[in-house]
Length: 297
Image 1 (cartoon, rainbow, N blue to C red):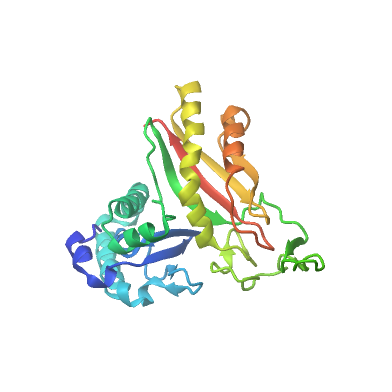
Image 2: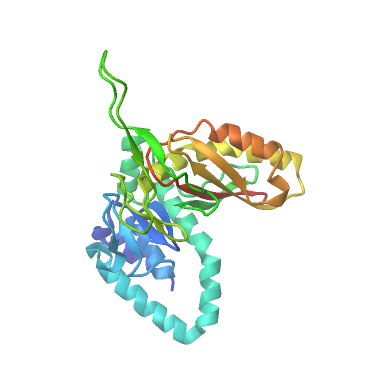
């Protein structure tokens, strides 16, 4: 179902605001209100999709007042479309439009169609579009996803500083934080709360802050892919990468899910670039960040 662009543009309830949303065990965003409403009409999210304004509280999208009417209209329109086109055709169409939906969200963030998101970007200088095109055929093929990968085996316990030492005083007090043995609420004060990644885990990291660092620093990986494109001019496609953030806030591990690039100059270049990224330190379960860069058109 194509969204009514005029309806979205003229609705004052969609002015400003940034949102995180959960889907398939991953946290996406931040994304502005109009782009999120457009995803409702495309069927990429629905009224039951959990969303958060970044304060740590999550609600169903259809229960947020600004999206209440849009969620009902989108559900009705998609129900009619399913009856007309059939579920198989609709499912294929959604798959084709998924990347387009994220590209539209990125365009809205860049050109400032959503004034609130643009104001936040000007205020803190940290908000970047979900997807970027760096020229020369190098682009971000999928928005960063934050979760917990089975490949990132957590340690039994982590030791992290709590109180800084006073002048001439004793060494800083340290506390031990163990990953929870069963699903439960967040172990720390991170705004992101518990994060899904194959199973629910206790987490002290903040997905929103991680998204901000990735959005700000992701362009620093583009030169690595541009150099690889020159070394491998015949290659066309996406190169998925996944990395683990250690408890000290530094990138601890890297995987490249493209067989020809698991080792070699591209991996070394990415490791060097990622080594300069800095996240907030935290105790407990370590998060992974997944994204994909595209080479060629």
